[in-house]
Length: 264
Image 1 (cartoon, rainbow, N blue to C red):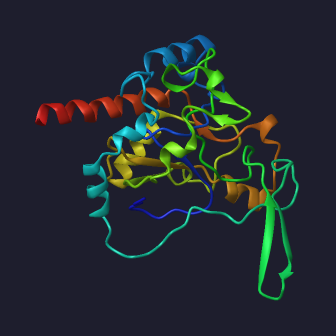
Image 2 (image 1 turned 90 degrees about the vertical axis):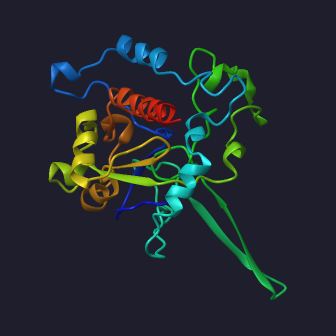
């Protein structure tokens, strides 16, 4: 993945523009024009749905926007051979935001030839980075593209499993640093991020997000945790995209798609 700008600490990944993950906040705004009801969110779910956009059997979703041409364009952005990881060291200590910490055990050397280890990790929570597949969320008995949620059982996902992205994701990455935009070190829990801020960052960075990009939203979560300590995320929330950002992301993909059709 090509990320043409620097970043640090925890980054929320939004793929879709390639949308995969986002923490939509709907009630934190003090501005009345930014408040959204449950009905508003339900309307957005219906109006912005990608179900059927790439055919009724599609299992990739907006990863379809990462075309061969997009990968080639991303590869051409490389100027220096520096590797920058998004990984964090595992959190082994139990805390309010990590009730089920990473457990690791190094076993004795076997016949003086090699060492082996074993570990247990609870991916879903607020401490360990992972990528959800499209079968993760249910909506009215369905998962992405209208597949039945019955396709997800104790034996695994029969549709929309993570194996659909086993070829990897390679595209241009765009960092949107909201704390820097606001002139702070980090965002407070529950702080919503609005579409106009995404546009403001584009203007400030001189980079326009386009269809097929991977968008990284930096909130400074880990910077705040390091300075202040852990907090109960279930009670106090986390900073994240306001639900109204879904409209911006959807219009972006459609705008780029329309421009491509005009050129061809």
